[in-house]
Image 1 (cartoon, rainbow, N blue to C red):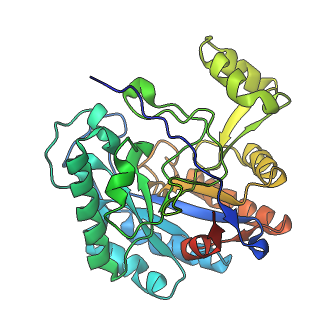
Image 2: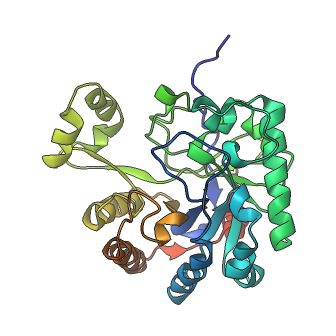
Length: 331
């Protein structure tokens, strides 16, 4: 019998050392190129953008930012990733983590389907086997154990925490607060906090949600009102256009800079201790994602990052690395 969509239950909030302040983390879903409009496939993907990660890394370093690359199996086993990021990772100018795309991660014991594209829907032993194989591939590529995990499509499930216990991973960053993927068979994150929490009371695993904020006049009632608006055709768009309510994830992909900066200010004003940005690595080359189709789109995305980094600096929000988050966290 199905248990219904997975919905995490937040544990105790993570408290950080007094001098930690407010920080931000840049996460890169470092993955293969594929057609987002086609069914999931084990083959036929591309990796041509991987060498371009070196340029993004240099850009971040010029702003004092150490990105976190959440890497899936096709990229982890492509020699170009070591060339692009190996020196930066070894020197502590970047961190690596695990991103599990089940459909391209061995062992392949499942039927390809939308339901099975969420790793948390797989049999627990298969989810664990895929995770451990990918984790080992990253150890082999970089000589260091990843400490952070994101499920592809944010697809954690009931047994994901048990699977992570077989690795050195100390942070899960799969929760996309205020989003609901249950219509496709995925998890439901509506109403969940954007502040980090302990997944288990023993303090062994931190949940670090991606930062999504509500903006607009009615933002304080954002969660319940937004869920109601989604059930009424065109109401959600009307609320956003009138400046009453909008759901804004902190990503350059599909989020205009002014709206992102408003959401960022709300996150800072609300005291979110670790603000998590994200985007997909294939967007670094035009034509691989719906968000970056042209050179002008790419230039606009890099300008988005420039302005966002500058805004964080102006508000006293400093970049952070994964080991620093772990070291500063307490129950």
